[in-house]
Length: 74
Image 1 (cartoon, rainbow, N blue to C red):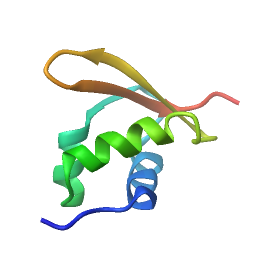
Image 2 (tube, helix red, strand yellow; image 1 turned 90 degrees about the vertical axis):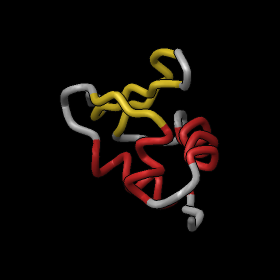
Image 3 (cartoon, one colour; image 1 turned 180 degrees about the vertical axis):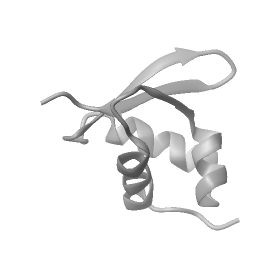
């Protein structure tokens, strides 16, 4: 299993975001990108405040954190 970069996760989020909310989990993103869920989770936390055109927020927590993703309103 290869590891992925923060830039790769950021690009994935921007590509995936739409005007309707999308709910994601780190393990789903890691599966799509071929990386580690632990690394993805760390990058999601870091990118939460850094994305300008995309809104990313922790939404719910059960077995793992669910993230709410959508294009930010300008």
